[in-house]
Length: 174
Image 1 (spheres, rainbow, N blue to C red):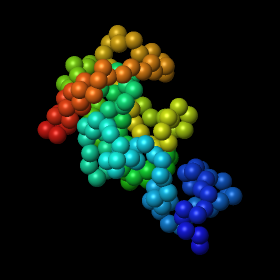
Image 2 (image 1 turned 30 degrees about the vertical axis):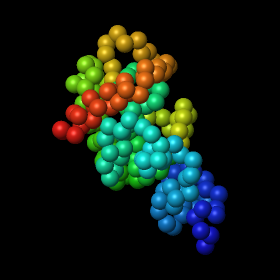
Image 3 (image 1 turned 45 degrees about the vertical axis):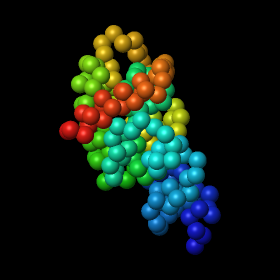
């Protein structure tokens, strides 16, 4: 059998793939992750790329989006590399979304938001091919309409760190 990285993989989920290529016998995401060398989110998870991390455990890492819809916009990613939600093993769906729920629940107290918006893209509009869930603080009348997400920036690294610190504080006390 060829070593996993020597093959060209169809990245579609094995349950969705046609009969042309059977699902691999080994746990494909683990081997696939070993082949990923240019994933920005894998670099953040590994600690080799900078990010304002607000939550990190053995399942997921949550960090501020560098180009937020609103300040405090957080991305929650699984530690292991999966491209889409369909690729995520069923036994990780609940644990990942428990972390999403915690981040969402902390946003009102951290930022004075009235709620949050939670979204996940699969392939289309997915700017980084690593599964990630957006958790965006929302306030009535904030101007967000439909699926057009105008982006903003933090004034500087200190402002981003302040937002991360406020959310991190609530997540570590929960």
